[in-house]
Image (cartoon, rainbow, N blue to C red):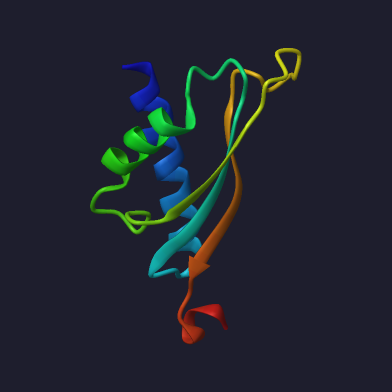
Amino acid sequence: MHETGIVRDLVRKVERAGREAGATRVARIGVWLGALSQFSPHHFREHFDDEARGTIAEGAELGIETSSDLRDPNAQSVMIRSLDLDVPDEAAQ
């Protein structure tokens, strides 16, 4: 399914960013859903929960912003807007 691949890729990007920062878990992810992305917030959450299972993103709070602008150049996109990571003090130095 196309949606699964999109969310799987997003989770991989989140994991990579977390590893690079030395994070032990992802606390919150801000996501932007373009008007033509084929996702509702509920549908995105379902896919995210499945794909994040067993990763540092599992259980992360999702802040989902949706766009209704069909003319936005990113209308077909799903984008990470922000990440809140739990990084141990020694990893942050």
